[in-house]
Image (cartoon, rainbow, N blue to C red; front, side, top):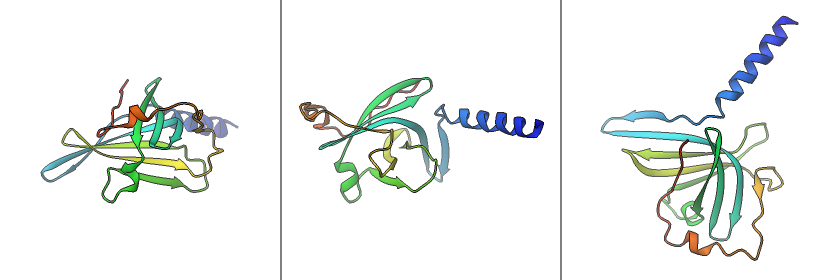
Length: 140
């Protein structure tokens, strides 16, 4: 009984560590590549891109990502659909020498997953996506 209780406490503590986004540094000769992983709370697909609500520390922040980043060759976006399992959708943002380099969305393909949301059809968000060339993030 004690072993099971200790295992459950350990599992809860390990899960709690992923709630906080910490930068990770990966170094290559002559460059410094950093990445930050965020838990996605909600993602909304729009005809011009994605509206992503993500957890940063104990807050929820929002960013916009143009669809063209994922659908142009050599674009700064990667869209990865998760397979079966319990992994929660996330957003990984890479910086190279302090400048935005690329974003990777790891999403559930099934739009019935709780992280997918619907933007009402009467809302026009086009002006927010026009001319968007860099990802704007909030940290804690």
